[in-house]
Amino acid sequence: MRGLARPALRARWWRSLWALPARAAANAASSPPPPPLAGASPGALNPFDRRLKRKQKNWAALQAEPAKCDYLREEVGGRIADRVFDITRTFPLALDVGSGRGYIAQHLTKETVEKLIQVDIAENALKNAIESEIPTVRVVADEEFLPFKEDTFDLVVSSLSLHWVNDLPKAFKEIHQVLKPDGVFIGAMFGGDTLYELRCSLQLAELEREGGFSPHVSPFTAVADLGHLLSRAGFNTLTVDTDEIQVNYPGLFEVMEDLQGMGESNCSWNRKPLLHRETMLAAAAIYQEMYGNSNGSVPATFQIYYMIGWKYHESQAKPAQRGSATVSFGDLAKIEGLLKRGKK
Image 1 (cartoon, helix red, strand yellow):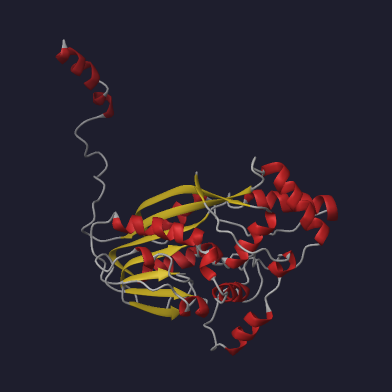
Image 2 (cartoon, rainbow, N blue to C red; image 1 turned 90 degrees about the horizontal axis):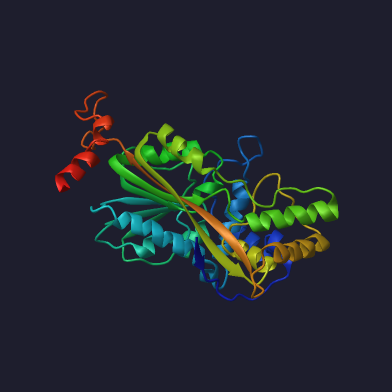
């Protein structure tokens, strides 16, 4: 587990965390018609309100200093870039799915990626994107409906965006389709243990004060499912690993404030729009009592899944045919004995 410093932010009243500000609503109304979104209506196959998620991300991008809440996205974006650098080749054309303000691009170089296309559902995030040295084209589109032809990109990256799509298998298939043969997908998304401290504190407070609870932290994919989903989408030579980043905050309200500033507020269809003041105060006290640090701060854990998958090409290394081995595992056990005899 790695720690990450959280910049000092001005506190706000907790009710603002659950309502879309009027300025953001006005800007959304004056924006050009957005592209079609998956999950426009609730249902078993649509757990997330994608229109609300677009509004949340657009609002976050319009804040006076949006970079104050970008520390987690920038950290994970840098780790994605490190994985790109590990592949010793130049990528003529790359795609960043759910790019936001460009948290991966700022860590890449034009020697590694010659041209980049950034895609996100939030037009304000793309308008306020961080500049990079790579020639970049920005497109407003849904991750589940990529508007590109098959076999277009040499590299596809995605950082902390795919956990909000309603149909993750379809999103993986879309990514696989737009990749060229021997192209690679490198992504990161939040894992199932993300914000377990916040989830537990809110549930206990609601049970105590209201006699029941509703979900306030969105569901996440299990790491055991990721490899299977990528394989079903057509990827091979898979690598999936996990990491945890822990950020310390003054209290529960600051955790929720930063989540809103990241555009990561809950957008589940079955979410509860408001929490009672007494419930929130109780949750803050429970959070501090159960998880508080000795210095008075509270930790928030973000579990990150990293994944790498390749699109098949005949030049790639292939496993040997079954039964073609010339040495058995039983013979390997004899090697240690032979080495000891040689030393004598």
